[in-house]
Image 1 (cartoon, rainbow, N blue to C red):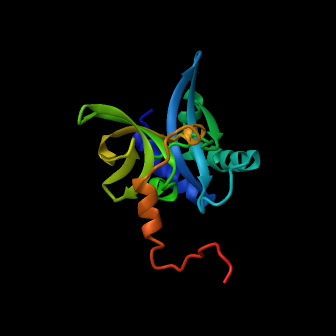
Image 2 (cartoon, rainbow, N blue to C red):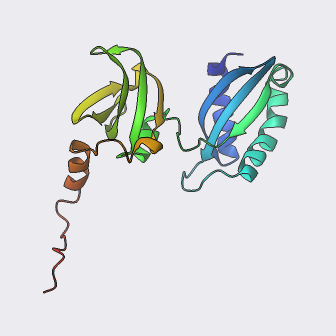
Length: 182
């Protein structure tokens, strides 16, 4: 089954149910083919629960049987939360998690590098800029093969300097307390 043909219709159907499709993949486990969907709430403000996964599954099963009748005969459907090492698949995901640590793998080397690990900085419609080891690197979305948040690495990773300064510049006009009583 061509995932590209499935993605847009599944995204629309999930939106009607109140969910966003974060990532779609097919996997083979033993003899079983699995269609795996990672979902989030449209508002992105609440975590996905088991009840949410059941609701999304129930809402998709009948629709899939009508729109793609042979799909469920060929594949099992699995719905999950994006988890802590959440896939980043859209520019809005990078914006939502600006300032967080991520891992990016590109399809082809960019300046001799295919794997990046850095703090998410500026995001445009074409690319994301990350700070890796004190250097800003811009990665075009068209080159990204896979990207995920790296939450367990955050305490160990060197803290961002440039991304942190850019974030503090946003508050440059805001009065700050000196911490001393008058």
